[in-house]
Image (cartoon, rainbow, N blue to C red; front, side):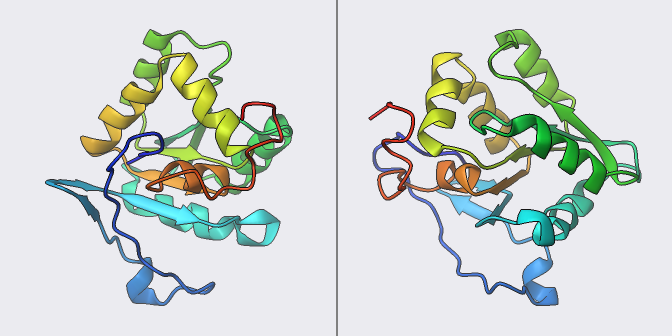
Length: 178
C-alpha cells in the first residue's frame, strides 16, 4: 500500500533478482497488518524491461484486451512519451487509461480507479508524485482501493511511494519540494 508519509507503516520487504524465476513471477501477496495487498514493484523497467510490467498485469485480466490498467503519471517530465510507450506495450493485452492528476476531479479519479483492474504508478520524481496525490486529495482514494484489492504495478518513483518511507530517495531537491 502506498505508505509514504505515514509514521509506523509496516511493509513486508522481499528481495528480487533482476531476472525473476517462475515462482517469483507468481502472485505473492504482501501483508500489511491484517490487510493483504498486491504489489508488483520494479526498480525501473526502461525500454528493455517493460515486459515485466506487462507480465505483472496479466494475472488480473478479465478478458485479453478488455481489462483496464489505470496509469497515473503524476511526476514525470516525459509523461506523454511514456504513456504512449506503455499503450504500445499493452496493445492487445488491455487498455491503458490515463489519469491526469492535474486535471481530474476527485470524483473522476475515484471512478477511474473503480473501473480499473490494476493501477500503474510509473517513474518520475517521488516527492512531486506524493505532493500531487496528497494536494489533490487522491492519496486516500488510491490507498482505499489498494487495501480493498486493487493491484499496484509500480516502478521507479511509484515503487518509492509504496515503501515504508521516502526519506532515502535522492529526488528530494529536484522540484523544490524539500
